[in-house]
Amino acid sequence: MTNTRGQAGKIINIVSVLGIAAAVVLCVLGYRIGLFTQTDVLADFLARAGVWAPALFIFLQIVQVVVPIIPGGLGCLAGVLIFGPVWGCVYNYVGIVAGSVVNFLLARRYGKSFVRSVVPERIYDKYIGWLDRESAFDRWFALAIFLPLAPDDYLCLVAGMTRMRLKKFITIIVLGKPGAIIAYSLGLACVSGWAARLIG
Image (cartoon, rainbow, N blue to C red; front, side, top):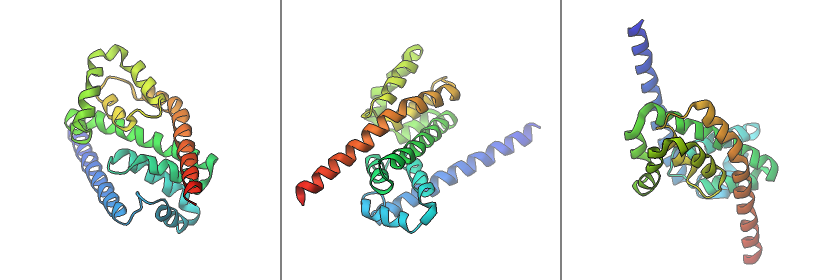
């Protein structure tokens, strides 16, 4: 029984590593063709996906949360511009929440060394002190998730190093994300529209 569990654990680790590696490769290739830096390129790419466009966009949002080389703001803006303000926010929400849970689980499984390899040292040093006040961490984390300008992706990794239960983490993310995503997505769309009118 122990050997079976050990083998299953190794398989899960291998699949996780391969999945992360594949995501990184896809991100690099996508970045090179402008998929993650140019809204029109992303829109054209999704248009070719037809009915699968929403699912593909959600997947890309999950990837941009997990792989920090992709600017998250562009994804939120693209979602609103491509799918409209309502469905754009919905797809942004689903993808970002799912990506946040993936980050939490990755940090929970691979620990401090993994988190330090992903989170910039400046941000890590700034927020790692929260772990020394673990009794208050949940409240600080919930407040940060609610605010639109906090480094949510990295904070989800830090949360994975605490004893916070997955159920509680998901509850905080599900309830705390909508306001920030709506404000961020629609705010970027308004700024983009204003800039376009100004230039035009």
